Image (cartoon, rainbow, N blue to C red; front, side, top):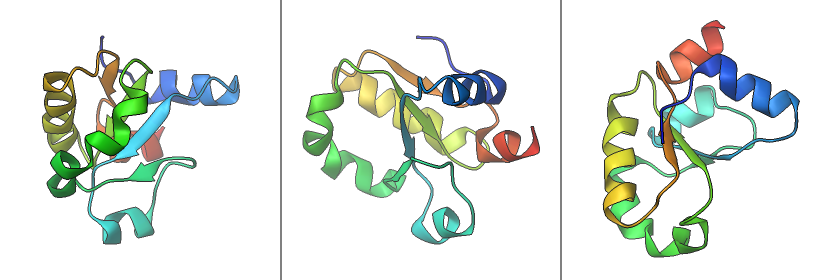
Amino acid sequence: MNDITPAELKERQQQNQTPVIIDVREPWEYEETHIDGSQNIPLGELPGKIEDLEDLKHQEIVVHCKGGGRSATAKALLQQHGFDKVRNLLGGITAYNAG
């Protein structure tokens, strides 16, 4: 799937069509600011959480970090494990909060 822009995600949220949102930043970053409804799974912990996410394998998932680097890695990892609807939030939470 193509990645998602902050504007597109916000529009989906306003229409109550929010996908699963996974924030792959560290807990202290998540505490500073986060997208409502997102779950925090730091990138370093993601490989150990794959089995816990099994029920989401065919649901749309948006991964994000601060600027897009860590979430690009997270997207690739999830896709390698058969998650087929993973999208990276372009520009990360920095772009999301700026919009």
